[in-house]
Length: 145
Image (cartoon, rainbow, N blue to C red; front, side, top):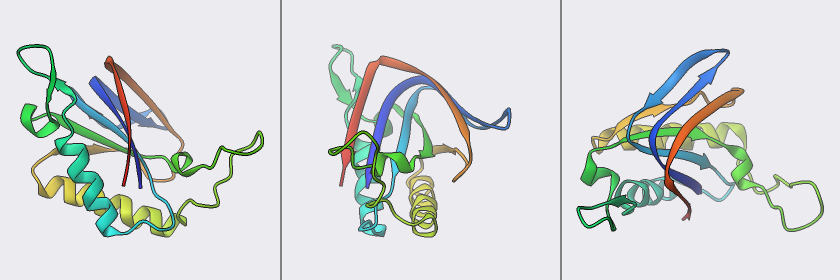
């Protein structure tokens, strides 16, 4: 499971001109699901996302997590994170999960995130989404489990 996280001051996702998910200070997570991923993968990634120390403390050091600052989480499914780009000039998606498996794990991830008291907003699975954000820093990390 791949998670591209961005520390944001605000982010939103729109589908057909309508805002379907929006957050203020927190993390925008672009979530990629691969064939070999399981519910355990989702739980491991959620632990990492919610506890990864990317927010600054009083001394300006990245020592605080999303949970520490009681920030918000915007989860957007992005199957292109599962792409293999090592060969050629066109990405291969052979390692990406099927839409049914990816949606199930995406929904599982979101429900688990809500269960640990994170304020969660989402995109719309498999929709053509427009994502806008203000990347704070900029700070961006690719997390894999």
